[in-house]
Amino acid sequence: MKPKEQGIPRVRGERADARRNRELILRAASKVFVEAGPDVAMEEIASRAGVGVGTLYRRFPTREALYQGVAADVLGKLTESGREAVAANNDPFEALRRLMHVSLDLNVGSVLPALVSRFDFDAVVEELQADNADLVQALLERARAQGLIRPDAAFGDIVMMTVRLSRAFPGGPYPEDRPLAHRHLDIYFDGLRAFGSARPTSALEGPAMEVSLFKRRRADLVRPGGS
Image 1 (cartoon, rainbow, N blue to C red):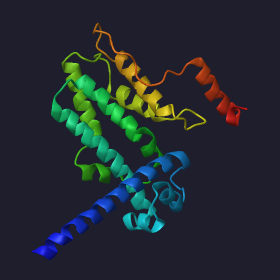
Image 2 (image 1 turned 180 degrees about the vertical axis):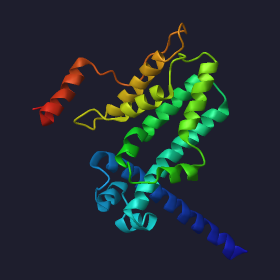
Image 3 (image 1 turned 45 degrees about the vertical axis):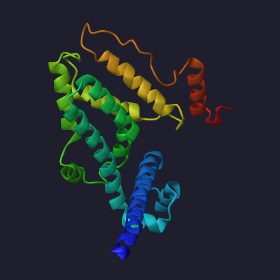
C-alpha cells in the first residue's frame, strides 16, 4: 500500500500543473487573438502564457485545435454561469445583469469575432450540451413575466450591447477599458428596467471618463503617444 500512497500526490501534482498550463495558454491566446489577430505566431502565445512552445503544442497540436480550445473555454465558462443563473431562480433581471458582466470579463464579444469561421461553433455548443443564447432568453422571459424589465426589450438588445461594450477604446488597450465597459453596462441595464420601476440608489462603480481623460485618449488616437 505504501508505494501506491506515495504515488498519488505526484500524479495529482502533474495533473494540476497540466491544467494550469492549459489555462495559462488559453487565457494568453484569447488576449493575443483579439490584439493581433488569429494568425499570430504560436511562439508569441507561448511567451505571453509563460510556457515553452513545446508545452503549447503538447496541449494544442495544431493552430485549429487552439482556436477550438479558446472558443470552447470562453463559451464553456459563460454557459456554466448561465446555467447557474437559471438554476438559482433568483431575481432574473439581476441575474441577466450579472451574466452580461461575466461576458465582459471573458471578453466574449471580442474573442469569438476574432476567431470567426476558424472554429466549429456547432461542435462546441454540442459538446457543452447547452446554448448560452437559450439561457439568456430564459432569464429574459422570466424578467418579463415578473415585470422587472421593459416589455419591449428583446434578446438582441441585451446580447448585442454586450458585444459592443467588449470593444476596446480605439488606440488602446487602456487600463480603463474594462472598468468603463462594466460601468456603461450598469447604466444600460438601468435603462432596461420596467416602466415606472424604482430607480437605482447605489452609485456607479468604475472610473468616470471625464472630458480631460477623453481628450488624452483622443490625442493618443490621432497623435500616437499624445504628442
